[in-house]
Length: 344
Ligand code: ADP
Ligand code: MG
Image (cartoon, rainbow, N blue to C red; front, side, top):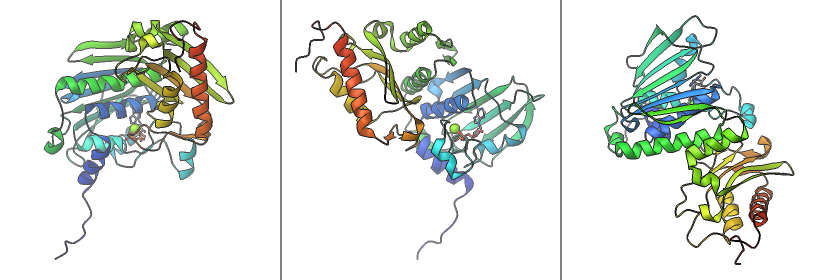
């Protein structure tokens, strides 16, 4: 007999949605950090215990959440970032799907504490799986928001089983932090693991402090053996640091490319970079770079998929040509005839 159709419970629906975006502690960190940035935070602190499996706690000084909206923040498809379809055309926030907190709270023990700047006090809501034990209470907290995520996948043993060692999970968390730290120089960031400070970044608003942040994240050797570029042409701007051949790596582990402040991993971009540098790189080596492409948000779609890092450019040909020629030329301008002499 054909089974009858039933509506999924809210909890189960959220857990299934969580399957899409919450793979491991690092994916939780990405969502929480993006929320803090969307809230305009200029200072973010992250505490991680046991690779984030036991605890992730993020505290920001952003705009906070109104007491009346606190529980709503944990509801699926609830967002303050868009209202109507047209908003999608020019969405400037990192999130807008209203899924992250609902998903995360369905697979962890979550506490959300928040206070708006002009509010008398903070409010707190806890959730252990949606609909279970959800309470609201006043709390002490400076303006901003704290979110604590404990025991990830405590109620989904099948997912918990796929978590790796504490060290591996922390490496993934660290990578997410680095990516975001490179995209927002103006935000101060503190990262602690098991009570020990791992990364402490001051806000970096001038040239020298930006370079310092790059060297804290990518290593001093990278900054010393890279060229700083900033080129603008027909509405496209490319700036950042491109590693010289001496900074080339045997892995693709130092490749950060941002489109309008968002990290992307895109085939078109990768292809343009590879073509521009291939002649000067030693065999089997990969370029190192931290590059920022800025262009009119109307001619690029960076919201193709919540977890993939693809982009769609309206005129992909023009973008490819611009990236290729800018990088090729920048390298060619450096000490011509020296170690950069092209072989091809
Ligand atoms: P989205 O980011 O797609 O809107 P989320 O589930 O990540 O969805 O968050 C839901 C809502 O909760 C957000 O739209 C925002 O209004 C609020 N929120 C979440 N985190 C924060 C934060 N750190 N500071 C202020 N508001 C927040
Ligand atoms: Mg979000």
